[in-house]
Length: 227
Image (cartoon, rainbow, N blue to C red; front, side, top):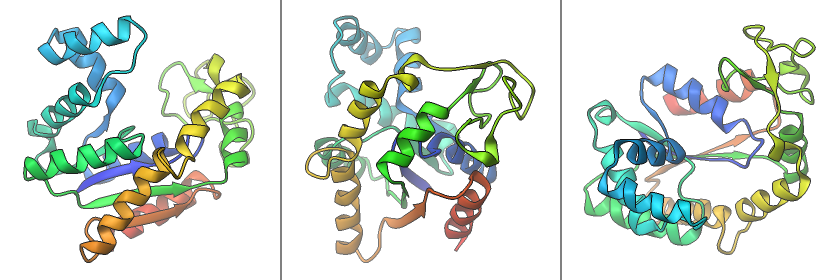
């Protein structure tokens, strides 16, 4: 089960990814983790990426995609994987699709959490991060996962806020990229939808309504993955 996972910031994508990882015993692969791992190990690609990062520049796809492919070919990915955080735009979708085909890797499923932009923004600003585990769901704007005062509803740990979660301009900038249907992340989603239509439903497209609570969304997701 080889999966690409899309959803705007604030859609609960990280939480749902953790649930899929646990349920199907496949690694939840995030591009930020791949970068940090390669840089910490001093790989050739990691050293190249660090040069761009240190200059405050975006790491080019010619470095990012080989890092991703290397990760997807590791032993723990032999039964599948869930890739989160890439591609972020249309050109990256096209490049990743081409690279996967060259490696003979079949993409099975594309998951998209669909959520209105204003709802997503409100969820971001209400998000609270547990110091013990960032995947513990806590959000002051969602009744189902509202924390117990200033403590984590799961483990009782201390809660923090990310400064950029309270920065409306930063949120708008991230969402401008995601909701862009011409060249942004939504354009990437639509690329794989067109690919699926052209190839008789491969990859399988799973759309989820992101408005209900975590349990309702995860139940729909698991049911569609098992169908």
